[in-house]
Image 1 (cartoon, rainbow, N blue to C red):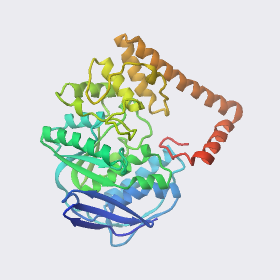
Image 2: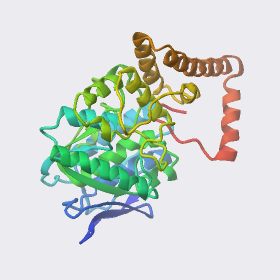
Image 3: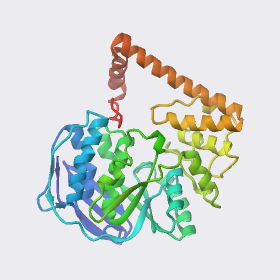
Image 4: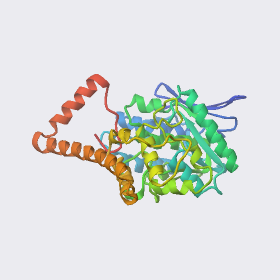
Length: 384
């Protein structure tokens, strides 16, 4: 997989940093002055997982220099990703090492308005100067209306705290789609690529999981620092707090709850109030005796009871809310969450029985059926 030399185009509308990777033009767009150099590192990071999925060497044109620290980090990153999912094979990275450019002033945080990012912001408020809001990650590029409303909310937050909001658009999710990579797996590389393109001395990536519940995930305390160069440090932050702890910390800051946006549904509503992330947040707000105009109140338990726990990574978040509901004596929430947890554990028992008695043939047959009618399953962090 070949990476051509990057280009940086500037005009009155902003900056575009782009490069051709295996005949696909990848780009980042931001306001004027967003990108200070045409370094190739962002595109090396963006292409790595696709190369691993193909089992294909990653080749950078000789005149485009790559940070020695990043090249060393890519070796470790590949070891971790391969251990998590053997479908991601270790590949050779052919690149010319070279010194990193001087960093730009300031400290950045990826900020979507969600619980994790808001917690990290409040924790490092005095240090952080820029809030980076990505269009093309959680909000798809074609959803201009939702992005505009989320941008306006995040701009209000940035203005309230005296920070600079830096909206960045990118088409990097096309790489994940082309190589059947789960967005949960690819998000760490996407964020790291943007961080290296922006070139701040330090960029914070807020933790998705509590230290107690860590598992294979795209952003991870093992992975995120390894994307760093000699002059751009990427910091994984916030894993010391559970999601409930984070919401309680946010609620202590006047006005902070009003701008929360956790929804991944890409629907017209700012928070749809019915997806898994919305409902989990609404449960925590109810149990903590809090409310936010950004969310509807959780009145009926029916949508909560119907939630499906899709992956092992989600189970600790349900268990955390379940424990809080027990402590608060909210029987309605306890029963609803218990129903979700029981269905998940029943499916685990069925999978175990399939492994023991049928050698996994039932699951493999179901996957072949889904591949035929729904397309291939994405490559996940934790393996097939």
